[in-house]
Length: 379
Image (cartoon, rainbow, N blue to C red):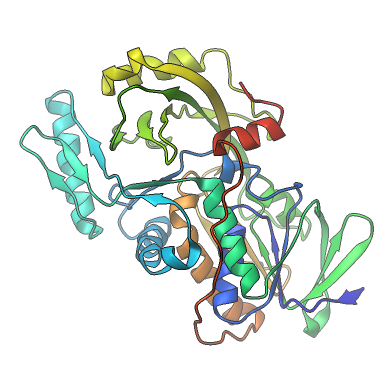
């Protein structure tokens, strides 16, 4: 076993792992991000909607809600530092009947409780000015670039296969090939495989299963200028229609409860499940050309959501599990929250906040094709 010059090992190079590394770098704490895949954001972080939600419809007082709201405040402070592309296009939810209008009224009251700005228009539509879209892959790479400027290091194709105590000195992290790293603290941000990492120390803070969300991508002659929302359900925010940073229009997602964490395919009936609902919301899609589709696997927890807690079996280990579809929106708040937990539970000394610098990072190609191609599921 060799000591590492990083104080914290972060398992997972998605948006949550990179946000943790970024938050630590801002406080002068060195980290080593260990990503099992050959690139960052090749799983759920690269196959979502790219929407940055405000938390207007989130459960008041819940940890997820608090972290979404905190992230929204942090984004305003950090966007220049991150140089990440963000378009504050706003969102609109238009009810179709009296029952939906009552539901929209309840959402407006929920937004008021969460202190999120919304506007109820005369036709019953709810407008949420703060909703925004980003390129989620570029957002992850921006977090990573800023974290690197503050001393974080990233190792790709580095699956963690074991975690053991190193006594008072911290945690021993075993990588494939019998390589070991010795650090003061570890953060389990392994997404779909966070429960697999937890089982390495005999724990299961949450059982993770993939909730598949499929999307259709269109090149539309008429540009869409805002996110069109649906009424949320227990499974998510419903089928949305929204613009992308690069001028396309996307409709989705589905919400399918699945078991196979490796199945990134778009299923044969996805088009039928999405298109009819999307056309009701945005009739101009009938004249648009569908140019692609993709699927994301959201790390849902069985009976659990946003499980962020210290390990009971291995001192110095923090689990960040069951971070579902709002992970992109909540990531900055999660990073800050976890940094505080490392100080409390792993003895990590946080320095004063400091600005970081990073050049704009723009991975080539459409962000929604990258992970699909990697998983052999592009259409």
